[in-house]
Amino acid sequence: DILHYKCLFHIHRLAAEVAGYADVAKQIIELAVNGAAQNRSYRRLTDFTDTIGNRVSGSHNLEMAIKYMYNALKQDGLDVYLEPVKIPHWIRGNESAEMVLPRAKRLAILGLSSSVATPPEGIEAEVLVVQSFEELKKRASEAQGKIVVFNQPFVSYGETVAYRLNGASEAAKLGAVATLIRSITPFSINSPHTGMQSYQNGVKQIPTACITLEDAELMQRMAQRGQKIVVRLTMDAKSLPAADSFNTVAEIKGWQHPEQVVLLSGHLDSWDVGQGAMDDGGGAMISWEALSLIRDLGLRPRRTLRTVLWTAEEQGGVGAQQYYDLHKVNISNFDLVMESDTGTFAPVALQFTGSGAARKVMEEVVKLLAPINTTKLEKHGEGTDISPWMQAGVPGASLHVADSRYFWFHHSEGDTMTVQNPRDMDLCSALWAVVAFVVGDLQDMLPR
Image (cartoon, rainbow, N blue to C red; front, side, top):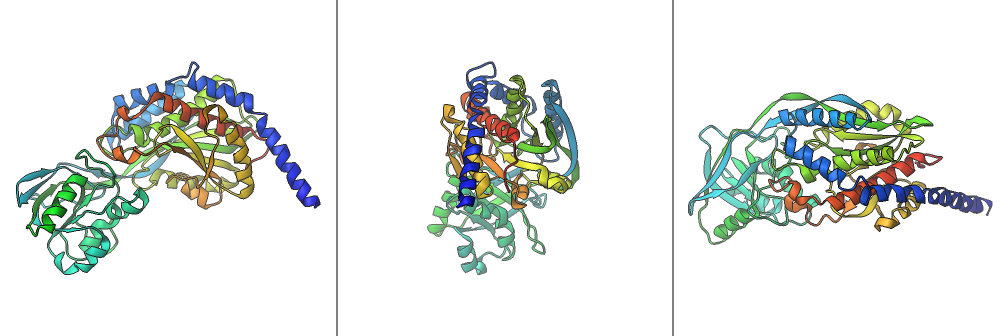
């Protein structure tokens, strides 16, 4: 019984402590949404993406992006430094695909990262259309010497992305000469979407690219009619040695426990198409904006608030993994890791991974977001870049936004500033800043 009362008293004390931040939370929200900082994160993102453009791992554009952000964060009066990392360097080069039979038609394609090239004259071969890995296995005897076209339906990104990741190796095992994979998206205006793929060890590497939903379905219908389909594919992609790059770090030092850290993050790299405005320019900008809002109000938390703009996330969280390897020796000082990488549309909730006791604290923290109507705390903080920390037991949080259109534009030429909305970004920035500041200023770190 005594334990029970102690527990209740502790929860009550904690709720009162968090509730004491209501005025500060209102000030942050007011500044971001209606005050002098209104539209600021959107303007910053516009200036950045219009100036630099897309910025794929290993590219000159990514180097320019890191320099740009380093200077911008410095000018904003934050403590800024760069941490060196090694990252993949793949170049798309020229690529094209045409259907030769049963009629002539140009196919819109985007090669997948680390894809090998075709021979200079290209590959011309008959097509085998399948809708699943199961169907490919059943028709294994037909795959030899063919270009395998995967026309898998979009179920969810998490499930369907396996075709992009593993399609080339699965087809190569059966003697296929190339793969064309239906883009991982529920919606298309003849738009191909690129992304990461990984060759399996000991399996022949064959060229692989994504095609549009429309062309995948067209070839499916032709195959069902029994028509012979022939495609000519030309790709001169190449992988170069690992490139030097940086994770970009900006901080507001804690006044009492500067060694303890609340980490906010987004990734600075993108694919080599579109502007990388949504994926993940927005997440990077709100992680900067949160620090700006806190500094503008003259607030200084007990712990250090650290914004990390990761490099080479798109290649599988490469920069973030190296950051984790370098800093995990201080893992007990990491209070909360936060990542925004599913767009900065209108915020709906905060997603959280942590102990039951930490969840109780976070439930109180999100109540402070009542002025912007995002008081929901959902399960499962997510993000490629923070996952090593969460797997090691550090509490993690991510932004849940109204993301129904996210995969329409994801990894395509459509990922531009036109997708972004200034008010949505203000709301995301306000949420991000309130959560980071309050957690960073509480008497105690979140319980593990």
